[in-house]
Every structure is written in C-alpha cells, then in structure tokens.
Length: 214
Image (cartoon, rainbow, N blue to C red; front, side, top):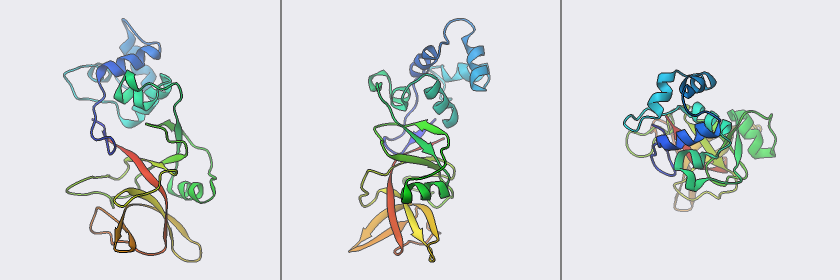
C-alpha cells in the first residue's frame, strides 16, 4: 500500500490501474504477460494488483512508470478518472547536493523526472536521506521515502520543509525537517528525538507537498 502525507493514506483502486493499462495499449487475453514484461514484474504481480480482494500495490517506481507510459497524471492514477488533467506537471528527482543547487541558484544537472499530484509548477523531489523524521507516534517519514517539495508554497508552522544550513565558509547543506516557532524564534525540529533542534543559520527554501511511502 502507498501512503501519502497529503492527502492521507490511500489505496490505488484496481479499476484505475486497469484504465491505465488500457491507455498503454494492453487489454484482453494475454495482456498480463505482456504488461509483466514491459514493467519488469511477474504476471502474478499484475494479477494481484488488479484483484479487488488483495492489497498488493505497485511499488513507487512502478507507479511512476505506469503513469508516464499511460500519459496520465498521478492524480488520475491514484485518485481516479475525475481527477484527470489535460495538463499535468512533473518535477526532477534530485540528490541532496543537486537540490541545494536548485533552490539556491535554480541550476542542476537534469535527471529523471516524475509526474506529480496537484499543480506544482516549481518543485523537486528527493529521497529522504536519513531517519531524522521517523516517529513512533504521528507522521512518519522513513529513510528513502520519496519527498515532493513545492518552492512556491510559503511555509507555515508545523509544515515539513527543505532548508539550507550554512555550516560556515559557505558550506551549504540541505536538510528535511519540521518547521516550528516558539515565541519569536524559528526552529527546525526532527521527529526522531535523537536529532537536536536547529535554531540558527538556516533558510527554508521549499515546503513539502506530499510524501510517497511504501
């Protein structure tokens, strides 16, 4: 099952996958074997994805590949036909140094792009680099989950954000944390309490739009 921070937990309905496969040109007898070859999975996996009684779902990378091959937005694939868009948006999946370069000067070496949910006109995605945002209770962002950020959305207290830390001598580091205010002081807080709060030398550059978690 795929979980998203915003909106909350969802399951991809088999009929949405079936419609995507038909848009890819796969239908009728023998389509599961052909699809399995195209997506790099087994025919049994396709069968389980399409079963209304099983909760097996495509992994994030397969989900994104299906959306691209079907020329669909993730909105439509995940949420249904009523969310189809004539125009949909994509973002680049970056590593942390690339993300720092993007939010500081708008430049990075183009990498693979993924379709996104909603109208994110200026954003990027990263894989969560560590366990700092894991939590026993509440929202949990495990290591390697896919984080999609919107650089046009101003952060509000309790939003999760991508921020730049200046470690001195212009050594810039990107970090994923929750933004909060205590009095007039801004802080970056980790869900994992083994990571100390950060109160100085940071600039928030993007707000989390949603996370895809397997």
